[in-house]
Length: 61
Image (cartoon, rainbow, N blue to C red; front, side):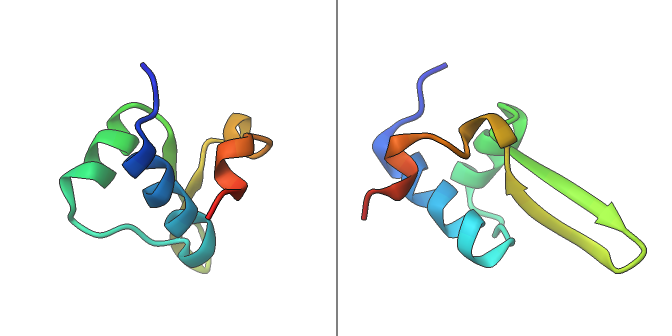
């Protein structure tokens, strides 16, 4: 599955805020395993799949 340009913007927002909204775009990214939910004793947060961290598209504004 290819990541669409608007999805890259959503991924950049996840990297910055560690949050997602109820937006359908985020739901698709979670189901596609591009965004993960992490939990520990401090609570839960979201982040991108580690394999995407080096993607050139992530650094575009």
